[in-house]
Image 1 (cartoon, rainbow, N blue to C red):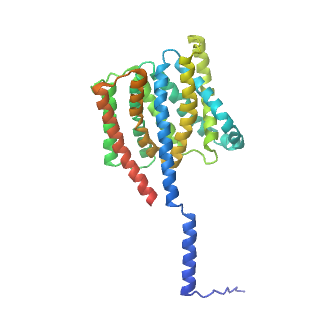
Image 2 (cartoon, rainbow, N blue to C red):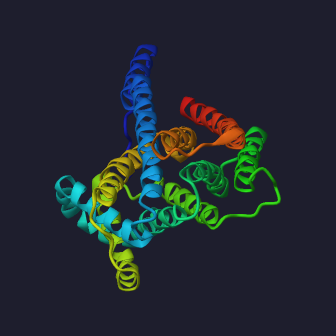
Image 3 (cartoon, rainbow, N blue to C red):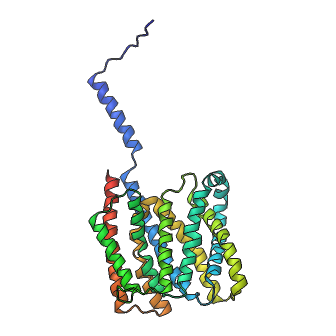
Length: 335
């Protein structure tokens, strides 16, 4: 037995009505351009906030380098950060504990690169290099982010490659004291390792599981990072002894714990979620300028002609590379 289904005849009027309804539905589902613009603007502001706060952390790190052992400074930094975010993050963490447990491997890896390794390397570098050098070497981390983007399938144009090479040239001249026959100071090498660790962490943020929100992710990475540092902290305490609790040690630790860890990491993670690592990296290029100014005012570190010239090369190179990435991002949004 064959079942025959009647078709309703179509007319130009019904076709027009259907098309209008489809267009209306599509317009409803399509994000408003104004909303995208506001999100991008907020992302830039959050990236700028993180960059300025982190610039201050290089100065604070250098200031307490002679009185607080690096591992102990980093361990207490994350304890302070945990206390600072706990009132806001404890409930989201508990609600999302199953998702966190399911993606524990990813979160632990992010904690290793972004919390335990990166900050330990920065504090270690502060023992043997200036805050200005630390900031300018870290300015090369967006170049490393671009390398990760290329490995992920993103095409790098000629202008971006030229910008990356220019920035690298500025960094090499800086650490080589004006010569390409580079004789790296120990602190400079530590900072290169820190830049690589931070770029790895930033690249990972784009793959953060959707079921874990920003506060829960932050709280978990801080806690795991502190646990990873605990054995090294115990060894440092046994070998080097503790440090005196004075305004010269507690003040910088509170700054790097509350501002540079809780506030800046939340702002940076949110910025990458809104505008991506490449575009957030463009804002990060302002860091060496901020660090140099703060170092001059607070630590009396003078750049000199070589430092200014290297800063110009680094900023010019990363701005050239970043402008190309930003245009590509806008083109992708337009599509």
